Image (tube, rainbow, N blue to C red; front, side, top):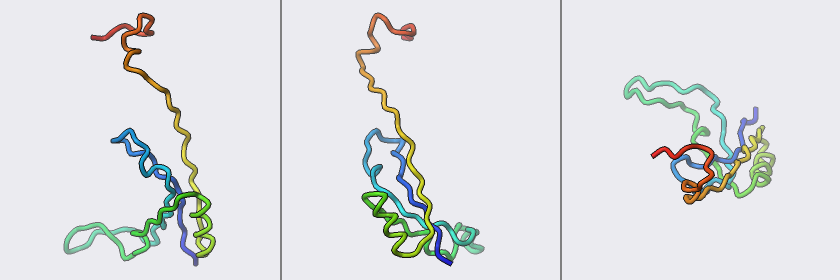
Length: 103
């Protein structure tokens, strides 16, 4: 049975305003067995080594071509469209602000 993979574009890091690494596409294997706690150390893990593999591609087409070439069942998750509203610091001091000045 061929492995199941998902192809997606990573979301932007919430801690930074930049778009670094947000344009690349990731191919990630879905786990084939559930994770369990190790009885000795208590760490969570499994014997599934494919769960550790994350392949990065420059475009969605490259990731799909790789999955098809290797005979993998894949699902593509399209990214949500970001709405960008430009703001300026000077807007805080406009006379016609919609809300009252708070401080």
